Length: 191
Image 1: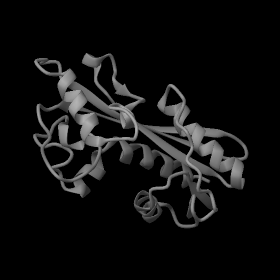
Image 2 (image 1 turned 30 degrees about the vertical axis):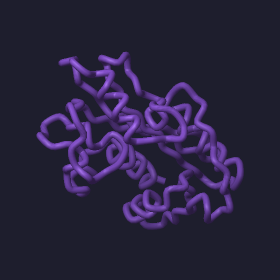
Image 3 (image 1 turned 180 degrees about the vertical axis):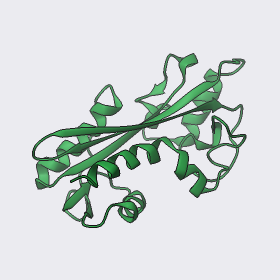
Image 4 (image 1 turned 135 degrees about the horizontal axis):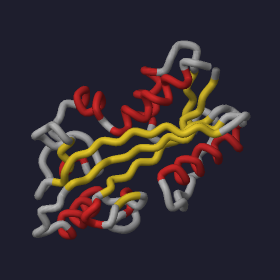
């Protein structure tokens, strides 16, 4: 079975390819000649993941999947949420995004947060969704050099180090993204 990952991130595509069940050949958007950016205009993670997966499926007619992730902070009414990547504006700026969150939480003791990833898989027959979520808290300043995005200010529940401080193997075993991809892989194993 050929499967297309609707991402321009080749590192992410390689990671996923390494854990797919045998018999599934992963293709990138570049492999199928799809080089356009797909605007993420939906108001939900599900909607944005579907926009990307559907656009790629429509271009190649191969089963296609895409993911979208957000950081949700109840004290900020769920922000940054679906706007996580561009919370501080466009183009995306991880440092600016983190600083905006830290500024908005300044003086607040309500720092609970969670990451959520949704994957949409589009096939000729249907659309399937897979999700993963991890709870934690926002710390007062960025710590650590690993990871990306909000990782330096997010400490997962049950840990005393930020995602950016954890070894990648540890983070990848508990993360929201890993949980969602594990659900996708379990589903693909049944095909």
